[in-house]
Image 1 (cartoon, rainbow, N blue to C red):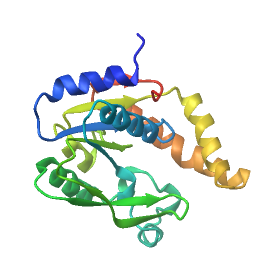
Image 2 (cartoon, one colour):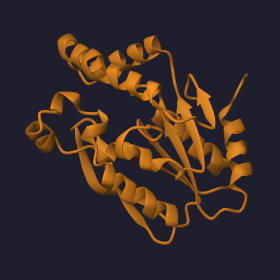
Image 3 (cartoon, helix red, strand yellow):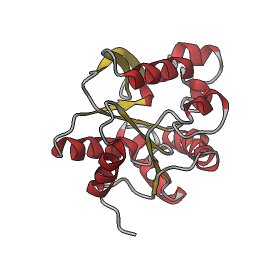
Image 4 (cartoon, rainbow, N blue to C red):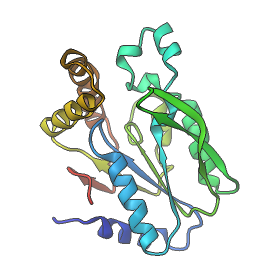
Amino acid sequence: MSVRIDDIAGEVLSRAGDARRFLIAVAGPPGAGKSTMADNLAAALKAKGESAAVLPMDGFHMDNAILIERGLLARKGIPETFDVRGFLDIIRAVRRADQEVLAPVFDRSRELAIASARPIDPKDRFIIVEGNYLLFTQGKWAELDGIFDFSIMLAPPIEVLEERLWARWRGYNLSEEAASAKVYGNDLPNGRLILENRRPADVTLEIALA
């Protein structure tokens, strides 16, 4: 089946009806193309005259100092390395659409989260939340079940993820050894965990649509 970003935007608009706030989840493993998909969907909705904002989950990474203390720095990105409670609080506040919500944003070049760096306006009707564990069925992440109005799962083949992850870490000028540790010691195991423990999505794709 051929699916375009405009097709998904049309389906979202149909489902939203006259809802004041409509939450969309874009989930998937590291390297799946979630950010691209979320940004493209927001652009497609805006092109149809709607208001939309993107809310990345990455801003809720625990600080490196905490991860070092807990012996988890090398596994940064696994479910236990996020402030899940803080993320749930923000999502529930965004769900209410009764006031501006300030969300943190992750700066990958510095490997840290910047607090209150992205405002979500109560007038933004569509909020596209993107992140690894939005449809994850384990731990406190399971509390997200039922909070999204529409969900998209990006599930590329493992070999595609592997290629993209290598490109990502080489792009940050890591050595081959350091990039290999990121890809095989963390990102790909996380990807398999996500793909094997996910709730069904409204749409499942192997590629992020343009």
